[in-house]
Length: 304
Image (cartoon, rainbow, N blue to C red; front, side, top):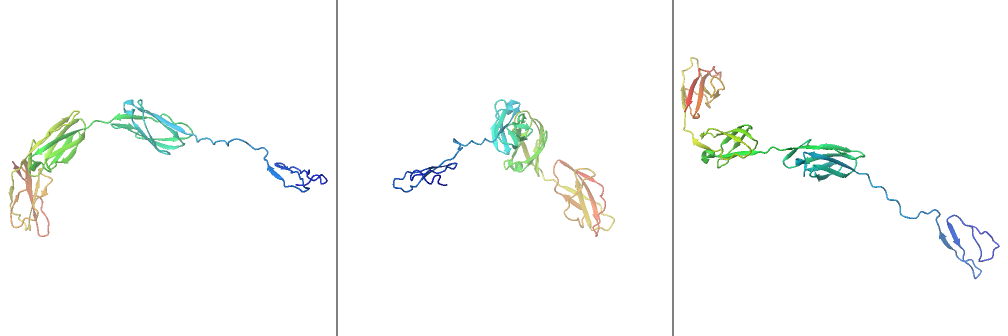
């Protein structure tokens, strides 16, 4: 700053102004320059609050589960760019709100129903997404077949086989009880088995018609001890011994029953047979090198 009029009287000096700066000269009463008070200003100042930035834009995903009987009260789970869950209204309609752009997955669920599709992928891109719809189907009701094999000595650990409209196998517990679950309506056959026992009846036919079927019971009876005594004519060749084979099908599916070669004998007793079964036997001759002959002629034994 500079003095404008050097010859002005002391105490009345003035100063040039610069934009934004105001100076207020003080009067002197003693002939000396007084200190000056400074006052700062700002031309073009804006008064009031700063503007609030706009909120991010959000969108909705909506749809319907039909028929409404399965859609009403269904839960819909949202995952992906955000997570949420909502419940469909009485018409099966639902809406997810406040969603940003992104990719989402929606999965419906409702006890007693299945859904088609099981889930849907949805992409939000600057607009609401509507008509993300599902179809519900009631799950089929299921039932059970159960019973007991007695006495427990023959029933415990028995194998029970289910066949027919569905197939399954289960074991009885220590009390001889068993159960097949998750079965639909239809016709079934139940057959028990346990080594050393016979069952009455041998099997039972059961029909499920919109209800559980209990009391499919069997009685186990100890099988009488049986055996089959076999003998054969010696081979005309020099042999080390013989093997004995058995099947329940004539002419095929033979399995060896002797644990070691039959040596020095032309006879064998099979003590592992079961009552009510027909068995078919053949023998072979084995030389010192382990070479085995073809099967002999077949004989049968009917075990009562």
